[in-house]
Image (cartoon, rainbow, N blue to C red):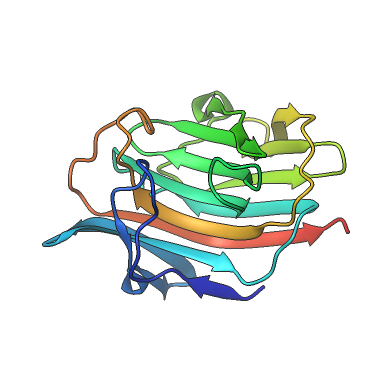
Length: 203
Protein backbone atom coordinates (compact mmCIF):
# COMPACT_ATOMS: atom_id res chain seq x y z
CA UNK A 1 0.00 0.00 0.00
CA UNK A 2 1.12 3.56 -0.69
CA UNK A 3 0.93 6.17 2.06
CA UNK A 4 0.33 9.93 2.20
CA UNK A 5 1.65 12.02 5.14
CA UNK A 6 -0.71 14.67 6.53
CA UNK A 7 1.05 18.04 6.80
CA UNK A 8 0.27 21.61 7.81
CA UNK A 9 -3.39 21.41 8.77
CA UNK A 10 -5.66 20.62 11.70
CA UNK A 11 -8.82 18.53 11.86
CA UNK A 12 -12.05 20.48 12.19
CA UNK A 13 -14.21 19.99 15.29
CA UNK A 14 -13.58 19.77 19.02
CA UNK A 15 -11.61 16.51 19.27
CA UNK A 16 -8.14 17.48 18.02
CA UNK A 17 -5.72 19.90 19.69
CA UNK A 18 -2.77 19.70 17.31
CA UNK A 19 -1.57 20.39 13.76
CA UNK A 20 -0.41 17.50 11.56
CA UNK A 21 3.29 17.93 10.72
CA UNK A 22 5.21 15.71 8.30
CA UNK A 23 8.47 16.09 10.25
CA UNK A 24 6.80 14.18 13.10
CA UNK A 25 6.88 10.99 11.00
CA UNK A 26 10.08 8.99 10.44
CA UNK A 27 11.62 5.51 10.31
CA UNK A 28 14.08 4.39 12.99
CA UNK A 29 15.47 0.86 13.56
CA UNK A 30 12.79 -0.62 11.26
CA UNK A 31 10.03 1.10 13.24
CA UNK A 32 7.63 3.78 12.07
CA UNK A 33 7.77 6.60 14.62
CA UNK A 34 4.73 8.86 15.02
CA UNK A 35 5.45 11.90 17.21
CA UNK A 36 3.13 14.31 19.04
CA UNK A 37 4.45 17.21 21.12
CA UNK A 38 4.11 20.75 22.42
CA UNK A 39 5.49 23.48 20.14
CA UNK A 40 6.13 27.22 20.68
CA UNK A 41 3.03 27.90 18.55
CA UNK A 42 0.85 25.19 20.12
CA UNK A 43 0.91 21.43 19.58
CA UNK A 44 1.82 19.17 16.65
CA UNK A 45 1.00 15.56 15.85
CA UNK A 46 1.41 12.94 13.12
CA UNK A 47 -0.71 11.04 10.63
CA UNK A 48 -0.37 8.88 7.53
CA UNK A 49 -3.09 7.39 5.33
CA UNK A 50 -3.28 5.19 2.27
CA UNK A 51 -4.03 6.46 -1.19
CA UNK A 52 -6.07 3.29 -1.74
CA UNK A 53 -9.62 2.73 -0.52
CA UNK A 54 -10.34 -0.74 0.85
CA UNK A 55 -13.17 -2.45 2.71
CA UNK A 56 -13.57 -6.13 3.57
CA UNK A 57 -10.48 -7.85 4.91
CA UNK A 58 -8.29 -8.43 7.94
CA UNK A 59 -6.25 -5.49 9.25
CA UNK A 60 -3.32 -6.23 11.59
CA UNK A 61 -0.93 -3.92 13.42
CA UNK A 62 1.93 -4.37 15.87
CA UNK A 63 2.30 -1.11 17.77
CA UNK A 64 3.31 0.60 20.99
CA UNK A 65 1.25 3.63 21.99
CA UNK A 66 2.73 7.02 22.75
CA UNK A 67 0.95 6.44 26.08
CA UNK A 68 1.24 10.05 27.30
CA UNK A 69 -1.95 11.19 29.09
CA UNK A 70 -4.28 13.09 26.79
CA UNK A 71 -2.94 11.44 23.62
CA UNK A 72 -4.39 8.83 21.26
CA UNK A 73 -2.37 6.35 19.16
CA UNK A 74 -4.50 4.83 16.40
CA UNK A 75 -4.91 2.32 13.58
CA UNK A 76 -8.22 2.69 11.74
CA UNK A 77 -10.20 2.97 8.52
CA UNK A 78 -12.19 6.08 7.62
CA UNK A 79 -14.19 7.75 4.89
CA UNK A 80 -16.71 10.56 4.53
CA UNK A 81 -17.56 13.72 6.44
CA UNK A 82 -17.46 13.22 10.22
CA UNK A 83 -20.89 12.81 11.76
CA UNK A 84 -22.70 12.72 8.41
CA UNK A 85 -24.39 9.87 6.53
CA UNK A 86 -21.18 9.43 4.50
CA UNK A 87 -19.10 8.73 7.64
CA UNK A 88 -17.88 5.13 7.98
CA UNK A 89 -15.01 4.22 10.33
CA UNK A 90 -13.54 1.23 12.19
CA UNK A 91 -11.14 2.04 15.04
CA UNK A 92 -8.33 0.66 17.13
CA UNK A 93 -7.29 3.49 19.47
CA UNK A 94 -4.96 3.26 22.47
CA UNK A 95 -5.79 5.90 25.07
CA UNK A 96 -2.84 7.54 26.83
CA UNK A 97 -2.98 7.66 30.62
CA UNK A 98 -4.98 4.40 30.68
CA UNK A 99 -4.48 0.77 29.69
CA UNK A 100 -7.58 0.80 27.50
CA UNK A 101 -8.14 -0.25 23.91
CA UNK A 102 -10.92 1.89 22.45
CA UNK A 103 -12.80 0.00 19.73
CA UNK A 104 -15.39 1.87 17.71
CA UNK A 105 -17.40 1.60 14.53
CA UNK A 106 -19.16 4.47 12.78
CA UNK A 107 -22.04 3.65 10.42
CA UNK A 108 -23.55 6.60 8.54
CA UNK A 109 -22.28 9.00 11.20
CA UNK A 110 -23.50 7.02 14.23
CA UNK A 111 -20.89 5.51 16.54
CA UNK A 112 -20.88 2.33 18.64
CA UNK A 113 -17.82 2.45 20.98
CA UNK A 114 -16.58 -0.19 23.44
CA UNK A 115 -13.50 0.20 25.67
CA UNK A 116 -11.49 -2.91 26.58
CA UNK A 117 -9.08 -3.27 29.51
CA UNK A 118 -5.90 -4.78 28.05
CA UNK A 119 -4.69 -5.95 31.46
CA UNK A 120 -7.03 -8.95 31.33
CA UNK A 121 -4.94 -10.23 28.40
CA UNK A 122 -1.57 -9.49 30.00
CA UNK A 123 -1.10 -6.60 27.58
CA UNK A 124 -0.04 -2.98 27.99
CA UNK A 125 -0.23 0.09 25.75
CA UNK A 126 3.34 0.83 26.95
CA UNK A 127 4.57 -2.37 25.24
CA UNK A 128 4.76 -3.49 21.62
CA UNK A 129 1.52 -5.47 21.14
CA UNK A 130 -0.53 -6.93 18.28
CA UNK A 131 -4.08 -5.85 17.43
CA UNK A 132 -6.44 -6.66 14.56
CA UNK A 133 -9.90 -6.10 13.18
CA UNK A 134 -11.69 -7.93 10.39
CA UNK A 135 -14.45 -6.46 8.23
CA UNK A 136 -16.64 -9.12 6.64
CA UNK A 137 -19.97 -9.09 4.81
CA UNK A 138 -21.96 -9.05 8.06
CA UNK A 139 -19.93 -6.94 10.51
CA UNK A 140 -16.62 -6.39 12.30
CA UNK A 141 -14.51 -8.49 14.69
CA UNK A 142 -11.71 -7.09 16.89
CA UNK A 143 -8.87 -9.28 18.20
CA UNK A 144 -5.75 -8.92 20.34
CA UNK A 145 -2.74 -11.22 20.58
CA UNK A 146 -3.12 -12.22 24.24
CA UNK A 147 0.08 -12.69 26.23
CA UNK A 148 -1.80 -14.97 28.63
CA UNK A 149 -3.04 -17.26 25.84
CA UNK A 150 -0.15 -16.72 23.34
CA UNK A 151 -2.65 -16.52 20.49
CA UNK A 152 -5.19 -14.22 18.86
CA UNK A 153 -8.28 -13.73 21.04
CA UNK A 154 -11.57 -12.14 19.97
CA UNK A 155 -12.44 -9.17 22.19
CA UNK A 156 -15.46 -7.78 20.34
CA UNK A 157 -17.89 -8.64 17.57
CA UNK A 158 -20.57 -6.39 16.09
CA UNK A 159 -23.01 -7.32 13.33
CA UNK A 160 -23.15 -3.82 11.88
CA UNK A 161 -22.41 -3.82 8.18
CA UNK A 162 -19.71 -1.65 6.64
CA UNK A 163 -20.79 -0.91 3.08
CA UNK A 164 -18.38 1.88 2.12
CA UNK A 165 -14.75 1.70 1.01
CA UNK A 166 -12.31 3.51 3.33
CA UNK A 167 -8.72 4.68 3.60
CA UNK A 168 -6.44 3.11 6.20
CA UNK A 169 -4.98 5.58 8.72
CA UNK A 170 -2.25 5.60 11.37
CA UNK A 171 -1.95 8.57 13.69
CA UNK A 172 -0.75 9.83 17.08
CA UNK A 173 -2.47 12.96 18.34
CA UNK A 174 -3.27 15.21 21.29
CA UNK A 175 -6.91 15.38 22.28
CA UNK A 176 -8.93 18.51 23.01
CA UNK A 177 -11.70 16.39 24.55
CA UNK A 178 -11.22 16.01 28.35
CA UNK A 179 -13.26 12.78 28.27
CA UNK A 180 -11.42 11.10 25.39
CA UNK A 181 -9.10 9.85 26.58
CA UNK A 182 -10.12 10.23 30.24
CA UNK A 183 -6.79 11.95 31.02
CA UNK A 184 -5.25 15.40 30.56
CA UNK A 185 -2.25 16.14 28.33
CA UNK A 186 0.78 16.97 30.49
CA UNK A 187 2.98 18.52 27.80
CA UNK A 188 5.36 15.58 27.44
CA UNK A 189 6.34 14.32 23.96
CA UNK A 190 4.58 11.15 22.81
CA UNK A 191 6.31 8.65 20.51
CA UNK A 192 4.05 5.95 19.09
CA UNK A 193 5.92 3.08 17.42
CA UNK A 194 4.66 0.76 14.67
CA UNK A 195 6.57 -2.42 13.79
CA UNK A 196 4.15 -4.09 11.39
CA UNK A 197 1.01 -3.28 9.40
CA UNK A 198 -0.73 -5.92 7.28
CA UNK A 199 -3.92 -6.07 5.25
CA UNK A 200 -5.43 -9.29 3.89
CA UNK A 201 -8.28 -8.46 1.47
CA UNK A 202 -11.46 -10.55 1.42
CA UNK A 203 -12.68 -9.09 -1.90
